[in-house]
Amino acid sequence: MITRKLPLHIDNIKKAHKILDRNARKTPLVKSFYLTSKTGGEIHLKLENMQLTGSFKFRGAFNKMSRLTDQEKERGVIACSAGNHAQGVALSAHLLGIKSKIVMPISAPQAKVEATRGYGSEVILHGETFDDAKAKCEEIIRETGETYLHPYDDVEVMAGQGTIGLDILDDMWDVDTVIVPIGGGGIISGISVALKSFNPSINIIGVQADNVHGMKASYDKGAIVEHYEAPTIADGCAVKIPGELTFEIVKELVDDIVTVSEKELEVAMKDLLQRGKAVVEGAGALATAALLAGKVDSYIKGKKLVAVISGGNVDLQRISSVCEHFFVANEVK
Image (cartoon, rainbow, N blue to C red):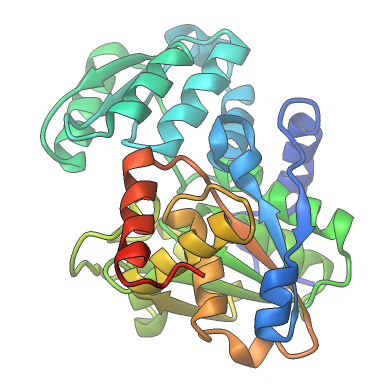
C-alpha cells in the first residue's frame, strides 16, 4: 500500500483504464528467450512500440483530452513536442474531434513532422531549439486561450501512462521487477503508482542515458537539478530537468535509477531488432540496454522481470547508422 499522499492516486489510473480500454491497444507482453538466456532471469518485454502512434504517449494524451470540459475542447488544444507526444496529441485530437496545434522546432525529424500532420494536427515549425518552440507555444496560448497539454507533468497524463502497469499486472500478477525508461518521469510515475498500490514489494527501476539524466541527478541529490552533457540517441528521453509532480512520485516510489552509455543503447537497439524482431527507438531501448549491460544484475537471478519498450518511432537512417557501426566492427552476430 502507498501510505503517503502523492499527486497521483490509483483511482486516477483505474478511471483512465476504463477510458483507454475502449480506445487504446492493450500491447503485448512477450517473453524474450534471448534476454532470459542471456541474463538468468525470466525477462518479458512490454511492447509499447506497438501502441497507436508507435509510443506509450498516446495513452496519456488521450486520457487527458477525454477529460477536458466542453469549453476547453471548443477552444482546441496545443502542445510543444519534437517527437512522440506530438503524435499522441495529434491522433487523440483527431479521434475526439478536437482542433489541435503542435509547435515543433525546425530541427524536428521530417518523418515525425509528416506523421503529426498526417494525424490531422496543424504543425507550426518555429526556432532552432525546443526552448524556442516552447516560447512560441506560450505566445500562442496567450493569444488564443487554447489548452496546453504537458507531455508528462500532469496528473491525467501520468494516469494514462499508469495503465501500462495495470496491463502488466493483468498478464503477470507475480512480476518481481519492472524496468522503465525515464525522460520527464511521466511513464515511470504512472507505472510506479499502479504497481506499488497492488504490491509494494515490486521493484521499479528507472533508466536514463549517461549523456542526459535530469531525473537520475535529482533522485541522487534529493532535489530537482539539471543534467546535460551531450546529445543522446535516446532523444525521446533527453529531458534535462524532471517535472515537479513526477519527481515527487519518483523519489518516493522508485527503487533505483541507472544510466547507460550510447554504445550500450546501440547494442540494445541492434539486439532487439536482430534477436527480438522489434523496431525500437533509442529511448525505447533504455530498459533493455540496462539488462544487457549488467546495470540491474542484483534484481535478475531467478526473478520475473518486465522491460518496458516505450516506443518505436525511429528514422530508417538511425537504424541504418546503428547497424553500420556493428557491421564495420564485425560485431553483428
